[in-house]
Image 1 (spheres, rainbow, N blue to C red):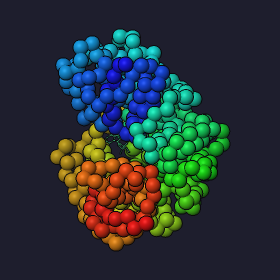
Image 2 (spheres, rainbow, N blue to C red; image 1 turned 90 degrees about the vertical axis):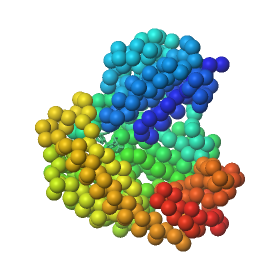
Image 3 (spheres, rainbow, N blue to C red; image 1 turned 180 degrees about the horizontal axis):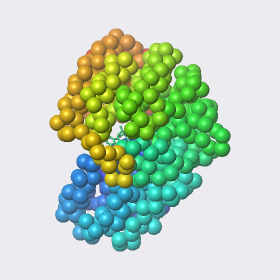
Image 4 (cartoon, rainbow, N blue to C red; image 1 turned 45 degrees about the vertical axis):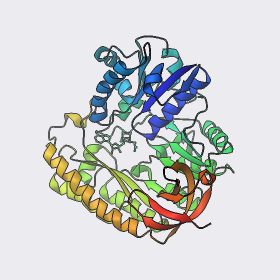
Length: 426
Ligand code: SAH
Ligand code: F3S
């Protein structure tokens, strides 16, 4: 048997793509997984290109792998950087055996033995391809509901790496969800770049959530990522009222300035975003709202930045993923003239993160003495088990594998920013 080592960078979509690749290679070919790169016969790097840093890292990493690998081991580059650099990867790093784009995962078995193969058609339609079955976790399953993105946000490279948006047929999604839930994954995570824009012959995302929730064995449904523009009342009402839909909403703000949002081509205003967030807090008092924020987008003035800070004060997000703007090839914003100097970007990012940490400390402290229903999914070191509350807090208790796959009530005793520590009471 040959051994496969796979490194996955970037988003949940990439994690799922890696699971698909592993399934293809371990079930239809003669591979098994290894966690030691030096033992591998095939080394795969599943890359991210949303910001520049991981792309730079890729080439130094290829060099390290090439030096340390077992004799004769192959190296393949997959994912979003593969999609946008294509054969340039092999030109810059001839040790690479093949390049497989983020939208060509189903072709992994075709490129395996073709030295120099480059499969990077970003509009290849693999929406109905049935992959083998592999999941990293026994207790939860990720399921793609769409591929690609039609949004063209001016900072974002994803439409150029994952291509046009195509909905995966709802029947296929339900079939996958049923299979996963029956094999023990009581939590289903629905994945897409823009999930609430889903449309399969008139079935929208709210309809899809309803259909998944009707599968008896499914206990919890999560999804990522929705777009604030498509958070209409029907969607918010379903989110609020369907007990299986977890009360954790990702609302990627990007900027609090209506002017910058327009430049970003996000399609909503600060006012719309606040309206949706307040409505959500009103309908679901216990909701956790997470967000993505980009600081120092081209042309962002101090006033624009303060608008973003204002949204943070008003919405009090439970979690923020914040980034400095990074110019990406093929995107419109990379050509904008008024790029922001690094010192200003650094200062804005640290101002934002410092203030958010203060807010987060208040939110975290307020969980002390509260009880959450926690679905346990992972063993941690030191005899601890981790899981998530319905609204997405990471919770840890002392315990053993007996807790895995079970939902228990937990009393929070020592809340920390990274995880709430407590004990099982029921
Ligand atoms: N639709 C996807 C977006 C994928 S990119 C989603 O909502 O998850 C994930 C995040 O990376 C974006 O929300 C944005 O905040 C950030 N990002 C994308 N392009 C960026 C860039 N050029 N510079 C900095 N951050 C970026
Ligand atoms: Fe990117 Fe905007 Fe789509 S952030 S993935 S172009 S919704």
